Structure formats: structure tokens, C-alpha cells
Amino acid sequence: MLFDFFRFFPTRRNINSWRLDKEIKKSLMKLIERRREKSSVNKTHQDSCPKDLLGLMIQASNSCADVTVHDIVEECKSFFFAGQHTTSNLLTWTTVLLAMHPQWQAQAREEVLRVCGSRDTPTKDDVAKLKTVKPPSKTCDKILVLSLSAHCLFPVRKKEHQKNNSPSLSLYCFFFCFVFCSCFFLPFFILYTI
Amino acid sequence: MILNESLRLYPPTIATIRRSKADVELGGYKVPSGTEILIPILALHHDQSIWGNDANEFNPARFSGGVARAAKHHVAFIPFGLGVRTCIGQNLAILQAKLTLAILLQRFSFRLAPSYQHAPTVLMLLHPQYGAPIIFQHLSNP
Image 1 (cartoon, helix red, strand yellow):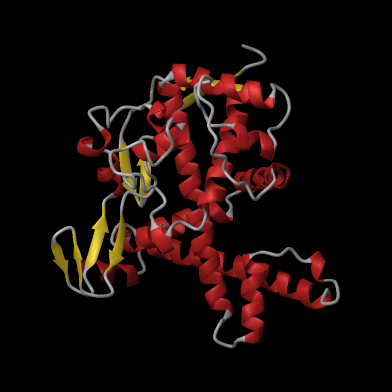
Image 2: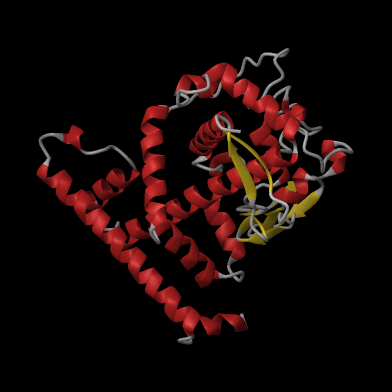
């Protein structure tokens, strides 16, 4: 592809994206390093470290030389991107659609208020009951098996929002992906995100 | 149902690609090994021969009998892909979206701002080209 060559020219756009790329890498390296230190200090108390994908990848890199820090950084990047903008996109379109169709919005709100009340933050059991929104006459027997508790999730989301107020990683991630890969690599990215 | 219908009309990823690992016959077509096949999720979700004449309309009730019975074909709805490589974050995404939507509906009523222009466009994902200006109103002080 002819356009590919433009990626190597130091245009303002490219310089910006290189800078963002460097910054993302640096902050992810820091994150990984911090986790590594934490797990080595707490070797006797394994419970104090959260059990998650990052932990598993670090564990794998400890026992196998093939998994480098670079690999972990790349994995993190695709998970951050794939996990953030797809879901926020879904929420954007859902909000738009509900704003376009007030009768469905009212019906959905009626269900939410009935199941969760008007004050309390919805819990995981409440959310499982929401068929968002099912006509009251028909009840649904299929219930999503929810593995995460709402209480766990909500503080995380809050933190995410706080982070988002400053030009944050996710924003950089999006910018970086958008600028760097532009439209030329669209098919590959679609593969990535699915 | 609303989230499903929203995923049907505006799937964030509009297409996916699969490569055949062996020679295979698919629906009467011979597909040689190594062929890349593009699966147009967006087009599939708007196909009137599968979804009926109201394919382009927002009608969450079509999912009232479950996802499999919403369309004429039981796997016509594939916003998260299908098979071994189906989206790993599917459950988390639905949970997050449900929770956020529940909190939104609980606290706000919302309508489109007059400046909203409906123009879905592809920027890696399916985005509203001119943004989504929406007016939120807190329910406790109308």
C-alpha cells in the first residue's frame, strides 16, 4: 500500500502519535513493574494480589522466557481498547435510541424503578432481573449468569470516570489507535476487537 | 431487549474477518483453504429477508421470545461474533451496559438535543458522526 509510507514521515500527526505511543508504553510498563514488585513482596500472602489477567500474564512471563514485557504491554493495549470503546459505543447508541423512542424509555424506567427502587444503586441481583425491558405480562425464565458483583464494579467505573477527567490513558489509547492505524488497518482492528 | 435491539441496529463492530484453514464447502460455494471471508455484521442485522420488513426500525419487542427466536435464522444476531473466537468480554460488556443504563434511567430522563444529526459513520467502530448531544434532566427536580 502506497499510503503506508506516510507512517514513517515525521509529520505533525505522526510525531504526535509516536509520542502518545511512547507514553502509553511507559505507563503500562510502570503498571506491570509495580504489580511485579507487589507480588514478589507478598509471595507468602498470595491473596493480597488481585487475581486477574495481568497477574496471569506476569506469572507466565516469570516461568517462560518467551513472554516478554513487550508482549504484556501489547496485550494490555488491545484489552484496554477493546474493552472501553465498544461498550461506551453501545451505551451511546442505546441512549440515542431511547431518547428517540420515549415510550420505550418510560417502559424501561418503570421496570428499573420497580426492580431496583428509586434511590439505591442497583445490585447484581437487581440487574439480573432486568430484562431491559420486558413487557410485564411475559416473564422471562432465562437469567444471565452474572459473575461480577455490582458493588465491585461500581467503584471501578467511578474511578474510570475520575481518570477520564484528565487526559487519560483511555483517551490516549483511542487517539493513538485512531491516528496510528487510521482506516488502512481497519480490517485487522476489527479482528482485534472481536 | 433494548440493549439487544441497540446492538442489532448499531453493532459497534460492523464486520469481522475469518480465514478458512482447510478446503471447505459453504452453502454451495467451494472455499479454498486460506480464503479470507468478511462477515458483514451490520448488513446481516439489517437484512429484511431475515428480520422482516421492520428490520430498520427500533423494536425491542422482537427479542421477547429470546435471541434465537428474534429472526428467521437462529444465528442472525452476532454482535459479539460466534464460535471459539467469540468476544471474550461479552458478559462483562452486557453487565456494565445494563448497570449503567439502569442507573441512568433511575436518575435521569433524557431526550435528543435539537442539534442532533443522525449520521452513523465508521471510525473503526460505528460512531455518530456529529456526536450525540442529549439533554439529561434529573428526575428529582423536573
